[in-house]
Length: 177
Image 1: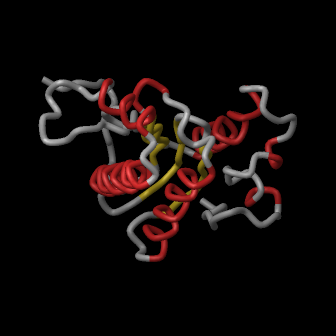
Image 2: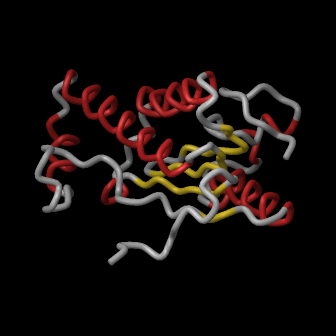
Image 3: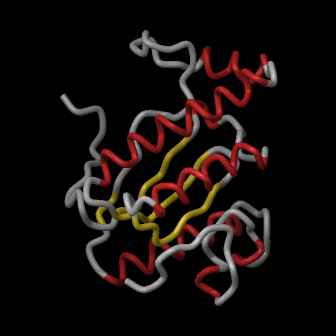
């Protein structure tokens, strides 16, 4: 039996995705952790493993609109790699409080590890048309505005909103679809 009603419908087509840290732990308030996410996305783009249309990194989750030959596999690998890098980052700095949380909130069936970083799944939603693509990108870019962190989308550093407003973003995205 499946654990989620969310499925990758067309594995090679754009999907809206959400990846959430276990128990909504605030990890991406640390720029080093946010940059691990950005570096991983850059790598996937440079290797032509993923096409990124939009993203936002919030304090405890990320949203993406992405496409790949096998997006489900690429997102699984992305989550695995970034989890390991971020956990290693905190192990190296002996950040016991954070590591204790990742251990405490680890699902009991995950017996092959001491910590769990990401919640299971990525809640993929297949982008069916231009209207849906526009709506999801606006949702992504308005996430920090709705949260009350900023007044304008382009002021959020960890988002593709600048790319869509003829400004340089932290990473490139495909703005024509």
